[in-house]
Amino acid sequence: MKKMLALFLTLSLALGMLAGCGGNDKEETKAPESKAETAGEAKESTAAETAGQEPSGSQTGEGKTYNFYGIYKMGGTYFDGEAASIEARIAEKAKEYGFAYKWNYVINDMDPEKCLTQVDTAIADKADAIFICVPDQTMSQSVVEKCEAAGIPVVACDDGLIDDAGNKIAPWFGIDAYNIGYAAGEWMADYAVENKLLEDESTAVLYATMDTVSSCVPRTDGEKQAWQDKLGDALSDRTYFSDSDGTVQKAYDAATSVISAHPEIKNWLVMTACGNCAQGAAAALENAGLDQTSCVIAMGAYDITDQWKEGNLLSIRAASHYSGEMVGDAAAEAVAEYVANGTELPKEYATPAVICTPDNWKEVTGWE
Image (cartoon, rainbow, N blue to C red; front, side, top):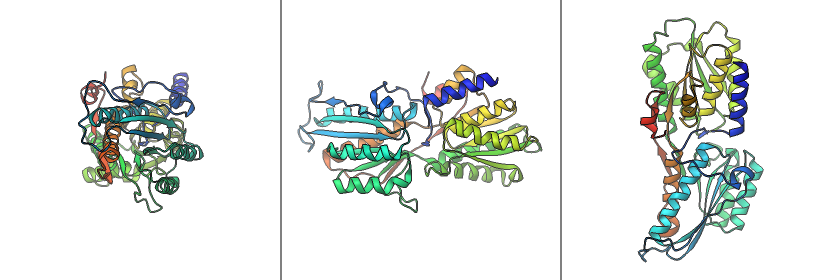
């Protein structure tokens, strides 16, 4: 079992993360591999006078070429899929409005300095708009100031661009963090009741959190509130927290520390802030021999469904499903309308989520 665990952790780290935060999920159409994913270089696509559809001739963007940048803190299934969705929507708008475009997708591997360099490169390349998910939200002000000085619109995807008080300072597209957390908390509360775990003194609650990422904090807040609304202060004397940066390894280490400190607990009810938090916690439970009696709900179904297909990490008994494709699609639609027609960018857009399990995930997600 330990050899399998070591192999799983190695593969998980090699494949990269999630956070929306990020979290960590799977798209219906995976983005093709590119230099952007492996070396942080720009992936450029150009759509000229696209075939099969005549432009209407009434749009201000007709005949122009727009230069778009997607600057992301990491690659992986969720973010690559989101970026692919942005490009796909831009291509559709290019056909509709008769403009050409270039799409540059770059990854900075959680390196703030590299991210700022990529922003500078986009500005020097006269970008018409920048989609960004920053590796560190404390750099938000610097990013926004650079873009404002250059007159380039910037929209935050997944992790907001925020000020010191946590207020958004640029248009934001992401998931409805609090409500997807609330849905997960409701599901876990029902699971505890249905399995008669509240009266068992060997049962405890564990929140696997990501307190340094603003988009993840509301997920945990929603989970906690849903539990309280349904069960009051049940298990409040046996509630613990394991905070991490959202990587599988750190989530595993943090969960292992809590689990090891409480050998009296045999049934862990784990609510998480992202998919990697869930995978790390599930691996820690497996290593402790508690995966059969414990329950983890993942925040995001990406990669979790792959684990279910392979018969792995079965302590993850449910996941909230939300789509990076929806985030990317909405962000690209808004930006394309802005550059082509001057339509005002919305201040924020949030996607919803639904709960899926090993029994119904294909129906819920539409994946195979």
